[in-house]
Length: 243
Image (cartoon, rainbow, N blue to C red; front, top):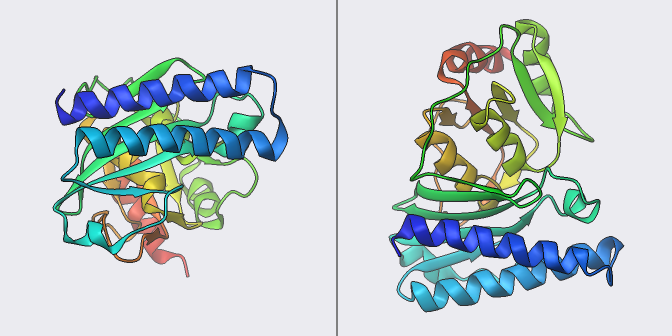
């Protein structure tokens, strides 16, 4: 398999595993999220180490190693992005599998198992037609104040949604025009979504307009903007005025 085919296959199979764990009906609550995370992580990490033994690996559920910093190619995975939504049997959670090359999110697959789909960087489709009134996806529980401020200035409708991957793919799928995040994330939260979004022709950057860089020693990534290109300059300009 090519790297892109491997990423998509891993996201698909991990999604099936997660659905089987949840649908067993034997685990609930926080224990379900923990079981799903650990089970999917074991599969993803073992598979990647066997299929791409010379590459680096960074996973939310795996102890980090400085060894990856010496690698040009590093797989960055999030077995369950949106554990809360997964446990609540919602559809707005995701599986992230990405390959960063020299710090850039080159290849990605975002599985949305609740919807039965995997969006891939190697199979981009045309962006659906945008709505006249822009829509911004925000956190279900704590919308970022910057996103709310931007929405007020451009007259956008706020669309509450779960995981980062689900929000980013909502823009790819034409369910929203803008995803602005300022509440702090980690590399595994955005690498696969960034790769898929960029491949589909969306604007992808930090909120100061600088590129997203991965496989850093500090994996904290405080902000990002994924949006339709026609909104990028306006959103960046407004964010730049917010103190």
